[in-house]
Amino acid sequence: MLTIGQLASHAGVTVRTVRHYHAKGLLPEPERDYSGYRRYDAQAVVTLIRIRTLADAGVPLSRVRELLAADPEQFAAAVHDIDRRLRSQIRELGRHRDRIAQLAAGDSLALPPEAVAYFGRMRELGIPERVIEVERDSWIMIAAQVPEQVPALMALKRLQIEDGKWRDLYRDLGEIVDSEPDDPRLPEVADRVVTFLEAVVAEAKRDQEATEVLEEAPLGDDLIELLDSAFLESFSCAPRLLRLIEERGWTGWTMIERVESAQPAASHVPG
Image (cartoon, rainbow, N blue to C red; front, side, top):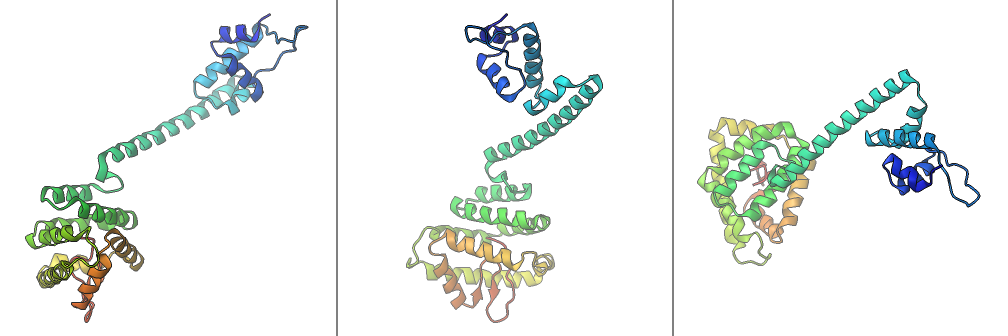
């Protein structure tokens, strides 16, 4: 007869594991001897080894009892089912690993390749990182809501970022991104934004491709409102900047429009 320690040693597990299997009802608890100790026989060793083998193979303890009592046909069917479940878990773990890899990759988390390439180009052109961060967060929301529209919008953005006037606008925003609402530079920046918008609208009228993308207006009102609120929350000076721009005849940010004609500018996506 064996003590619990000897039983555990023969089966290659710990005493704590034996007690755990007792608690789960997988391994029957023997009667205690006159000294008050449990004593185990050889059958207990065999049963414990079978439990350990099934557990090591990934079989949930909730199914071990079923397999211990199964006939060969039932055992084979149960093992097939468990194997199918494990393969499903492996695929799911693979997807988790891919997401972890994206976490390490920075911008590629929750962003399609077109957007990642776009932000890479912005960095190459020296656009301030703070501005990039705010726009990146906006595109994460866009990609989640209207993923089918992202390739066309990003193609337009890639063309725009190569335009010197567009890059100047980003640099203007970079200058005031962390400024306070009373910053004396804001009116001048608002003037430059409006000058830029006037030029963009004139150019868009000549650019059929850009006009078609804008006319599709893929961003719903709720998403536009969310993106505008994100911009307002990102920069403390943003509310005043938008007021100054509105005084100059334009309204909105994600979907910038002329106040008098509600004609969208080409910068109706974050930028």
